[in-house]
Image (tube, rainbow, N blue to C red):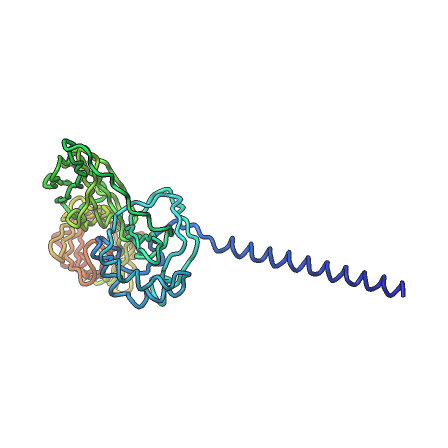
Length: 423
């Protein structure tokens, strides 16, 4: 009996030990899952709920209207699913404020769509971890005695809940006992209005921001904040200007300029009239040519070149090209290495190139059809695909001849055509 009781006690201890171990494992798993639910966000726009980026409160309201079913699906994934009717009822009359969300801003959850497509998904416990703040809208929705604080980034339209608190009690205003007390009038925000010139400029080129027509009903507008944003709504640069007129450098990658004006009491004001689309153009681009030369001597060549374009103005550019011309047929001629320096003038979709080029071969220097020479190069082309400041394709014709062989152009000159890609 004693042996059996000893065995029973040992078995009970084993069961107790197993229970302790299982409890520890489950606790560790739950703690790990909780830690993995947290997310630090460093970039806006990679998984947008809505595109394109928001630029006004009207854009926000339009998004909620057009994406109403997806907004409901998003709420259904959150602990506040019953908040959806109040949200849809109040957002169109809510006091929506444009703010900058600083590093460390926290959100209980946030709607998004993977790569901007498909059904909405929700991520919980989000913290903004970028040193640069992001612009967005902030507003409140009241429901069942609680006030819910919402945020929507301009660059992606993701709807996020920042927190919930009781609706504050209405302040009790004591009666005015002095008949001579002057009423306190709150300072009104100024109204922004601006003109940007030019709206298309090279990176680093100065553009004029003129907000002198901004107004303030109870004071004076004294300064402005000029912010350039990229296509995702992320800030590219920001500058505080004393006064309402300034020349600022167009930063590379800018797609929008936004101005906020400040009055002499420190109140800030913005408006849709102070958000303008702009275009920053890089002066440097890459290009590649492929084509055919014909020499009546005779000789036939296939040529290719790569190079760099530097834009002096919107009409004039300098091209530097290197490549080769392979001799593929004909009784005369030799394959050559090409080095060309050209000036280019553009108008509409057309362009003309002219300049000098090196035709370098290891052929017979006494044979005009085979020797190395310095050429005069003349070409004419037309863009057939794409836009001027983006990837595009053009077709061109070209003639090249040595400077000392103009009198024998019909015999030793090379005439061709090709296709040009600009990147």
